[in-house]
Image (cartoon, rainbow, N blue to C red; front, side):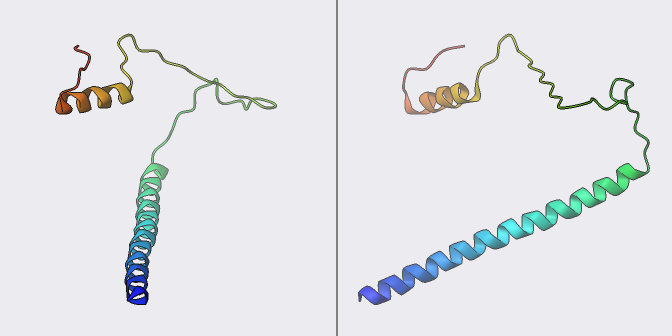
Length: 94
């Protein structure tokens, strides 16, 4: 009986692994084709490069832009408040 349970479990996990593998491969092919179509469409258009970026910076160059919003609420807090509203727990009121 133990061997039959093991083979059934092994078959189920093989199916799950196969579905996952084909899903990843299919999404990669789909993404590759959609990006190829979008790059074909962009080839005909002209893109203007700002004068600041026309010259390449010499050496190692990194630029970081940080944008702050005034009334920003993190997504984790939004999810937690939503969960608390369904479970009846105390949540923050807007």
